[in-house]
Amino acid sequence: MTVTIVINLFGNVSVENIVKNLRNIRAFPEPISIVISWSDPPSNAIHIVHSLRKRLNGGFNFNLIYLPLPRMGSGKQRDLTLKYVLKKIEGTEVVVFMEENAIVKEANWLSKLLGVFKRLPSRVATLSLDVESMLCIDFVTVSTSISRKLYMSLTGGGRSSQRDQRR
Image (tube, rainbow, N blue to C red; front, side, top):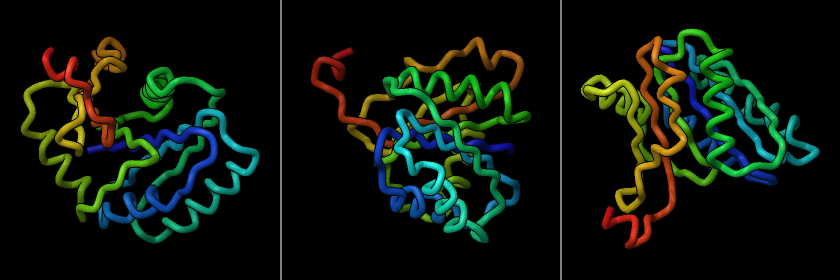
């Protein structure tokens, strides 16, 4: 199963959580594409991306892509990045979106997530690791993935308001 992990970044960030989350993938049988989608990146962003690549080297087989974007909201950033992934990374079957502040402590989390996807009946799914967060499906453009089987996951996310919980 071909996997692309998208990490959304905004402005200045620390990569410590990203490194921990990606190291918790452990071994994975196929190469993984990792897209660093950075809205309004700082001037030293390319050095941070290079440092991230070096710190992850040897953990698993991956291709790291840096996608600098102008300042924009997170929904638009996810949508543009999804379109980029579908157009530029051939064969992607699974897209996992990770916000910069997500913390995934579970070892082998990617393999476990893929196990869930294999049991889902739908082509597009979104999940969150926070049991109190809203499922975010508003940014998914189903028509872009009509021609292939594609699963998506959104990790992290804020808590939903009481109004949203009543829907």
